[in-house]
Image (cartoon, rainbow, N blue to C red; front, side, top):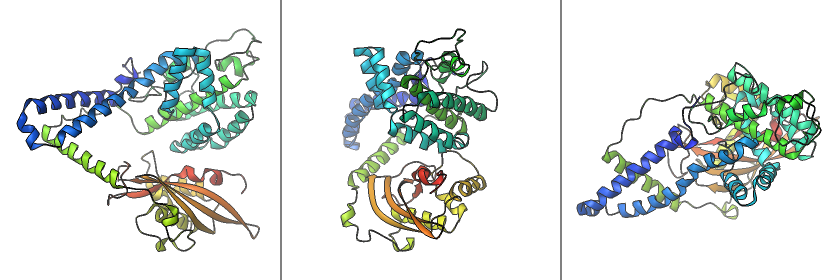
Amino acid sequence: MSKSKKIIDNPTSAELIKQFEAFESLEALYKAFPIARSLFPGMEQAFTEFKKIKEQAEILKVPDRFNERFANLGFIAYESMNIEVMQEAIKIYDTDGKDAAEQYLADSYDADCLEWGIRWFNSSPEFRRRIRLAELARVDYLAGRHHACIPLLLSMLDGLVNDVSNHVGFFAESTDVTAWDCIAAHESGLQSLVLLMTKGRNKTNDESISIPFRHGILHGRELAFDNKLVAAKVWAALFAARDWAVALADSKKIPKPKEEKSWSEIFAQLAENNRQKKLLEEWKPRNNHEIPYLPHTGEASHLPSGTPERAVAEFIENWIAKRYGLIAKSLLYFTDDSIGKKSGRAREDFGSWVPISFKVLSIEDQAAAVSHVEVELTFERENEPIFKHASVRAIYQDTENNALIRTESDGVWNIVQNSFTDILYASRL
């Protein structure tokens, strides 16, 4: 279990704070020696920007503040949780009380939240296998059938933790759902939920509950568990468990101590940051009306090289030709599996429904490293065409999966598999 008492003590947050302190020391030196101002005239602006960044870094304290208020109520902070939702919940808790804050949090687990949460299941193989069940639980939850979705979600949570840990389920006495440098798996997070949700319920209870007591619900002692608040808390626990699973898959072990950077290295990094900032300021999203080749129905090679639409078109051509190895190389991954495993997974996911043609409809450049390419896919069933729409998310990255500004020359466009979720996991097109 983590020795840190607070999430902000996690290595990633602690390293950022350490860098802030180092930068403040650098600023003091810069101001103490006038010659530095003539040698590095642009540094004054860098220090001004740093002050803004440091103010924004207050966000690092939000997970701890959230858990202090909500962990004993059944909600915890986790990596993929919307930080603005956390902040608003804290504000409501402090001004209007816990009941209003809990209601706000329950309402935040809406159709959009669940859609994105389930899409991220693809980042863990154990979660991927349960997407079908998660979709069924989502349908029941959104329809208000909490009596149906809560037991299903609880059973999924237990089985998932068992599969990920190769040891015991979420609700076992010896379970360990901590991980190094992980918000969800901090000792104040998932591990506290285990203790809360496994509390004994030895008497049959007719009164409504607000905590998803696993034993009471699944053993029939809680007779009024079926409400939105309990359901939302189980969804939250499930999404937090996904972030824990990803942390384990990323081999979040205690790393070797980092070498201290020299002042020359710090200045070089500042210069690189300024260069990237300039590139970002120069980049502008395209307007669909100004793209002459839309809509596009021809070969991918006829689209401009290096564009997200070219990458998406090539991806779909490989799908049509059942080139699963090339499909695997084009997908965005969160785990470092071998290419053989990735190819097998691509065959499993993309082999059930294979399109016969496609059309690129439009392009939305959402950020310097992100575009959505709207496509129409044509499938065939019983000699009749079936048309399916997909909004394909493409991300420009370097070889280490870091996002790059698209005007950089050494990146590639990777495809987010969740863009095709409604097609890949459909029982029937």
